[in-house]
Image (cartoon, rainbow, N blue to C red; front, top):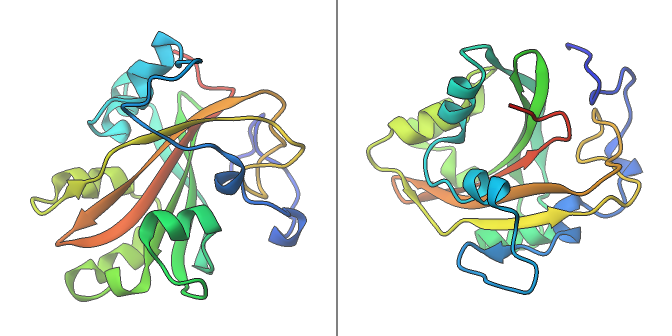
Length: 197
């Protein structure tokens, strides 16, 4: 693992995280026009319907890579289960990665893929390794995407993932349900404090 300013150099366990960040966040639809709208810079990134992977590749002048933090069968958080309409005890393949740009951790991405999605030709999603999921999604002719949701995730002394340092200031994130051949998966992308252009 490449150690950067946002990455921890030691290992911990998920039991240290009492409430998942997706449950703490207030996820709003892209059409929400509330009292505190997001700044224009973040609106441009969070509401972009295109491939974030491709946009990061372009912004990094090709100095882009995916660093896999973890991939395992897990019980998704309450918020994630609701987004995917999953029963309480249903397991899913959860993949957490850092999208690195110019050698810095730019985006933390968490994908939740229900087990029924990982059948047929989509079995290949089990073995993405360091390949970006976004490139696969946007190259699939059957891909559809539900409305984007966004959130400003406030710090509470807990990390987004066990390999990341605790958040010390609010960060912006987005998520949406993708479907390939009508099979759903949830993709959440959170911009890290070290993201800069």
